[in-house]
Amino acid sequence: MKEFLKKKDIEISLKRYGIDALGAMAQGLFCSLLIGTIINTVGTQFKIPFLMQTVATIAGVEYTVGGLATAMSGPAMAVAIGYALKCPPLVLFSMITVGFAANALGGAGGPLAVLFVAIIAAEFGKAVSKETKVDILVTPLVTIAVGVFFSWLIAPPLGRAAMWVGNLIMWATELQPFLMGILVSVVVGIALTLPISSAAICAALQLTGLAGGAAVAGCCAQMVGFAVISFKENKWGGLVSQGIGTSMLQMGNIIKNPRVWIAPIVASAITGPLATCVFGLRMNGAPVSSGMGTCGLVGQIGVYTGWVNDIAAGSKAAITAFDWIGLVMISFVLPAVFSLIIHAGVRKLGWVKDGDLKL
Image (cartoon, rainbow, N blue to C red; front, side, top):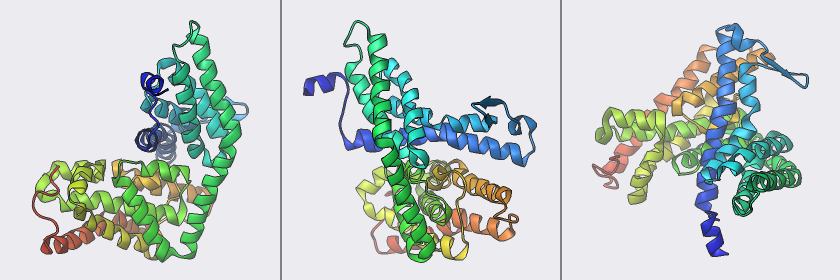
């Protein structure tokens, strides 16, 4: 069995499923749900007719250009997961159907259902790939049959479980914005820097609202924090690659000296409750944006999209100056200031020295 699994490149491990697959799922979400949301927002804000008008009507449902991209989130996630699991072509292409089924049956918690179902279907597909003379029939049939069966079997309860956990976090944040602001900000921020996907976690839990705002704060604290405290070693290239790219670049240095992580984590513990209690920062855009921070400014675009959605729904009168001040302070100014102050103290204690943050 070990030899067979090795031959088929089926590796049952936390890294393969919890890091590779989860990270790929987030990329699939970026290329569908997130891009679709951005296209819709641009079309609405700049009154671009082509982006606002219906370009397709399917089963009575009207779709804009952005709407078509958003509708493909299930297949995009599944194919991305299949790619991360190194699926052969016939398995990879069959994942389109698997992703659609899992996302549809998983309801609002579809991303989590897609993660589990896509992994199962992909591994079954890889196991039978090229094992028969009629591979072109057997491999897609097994992959899709297994995927649809498990979508029917586990996608609904997984979707409900994800929604329950997400709703619990959001309810707790509304009830205890200070404590939950700290908890959500720190945990999601740490997940952003670790080699897992904070964006996929937020998407799976459908983390929005005040909890989503705390998540944005935590992610920004990590990215902006590492960018500014390592500026001496990494200059402008490091500032951009970490501040708009990812703080995951510092994982090697964190492993060598975990104390370099103190400043961004403490900064996130401060900005989280400030976001929830002072600025009332809410993420009412795509949940995946909650776990993105300043990466490509997706977190900020998500917050802005949420404002636009709230205005359209009538729950928000207008975007105020205080809204903009809160977004800028939580996303950029406060993470930089707090991280620099805390890091100076850490260096004074001798816990971190020159070169510890060199990329």
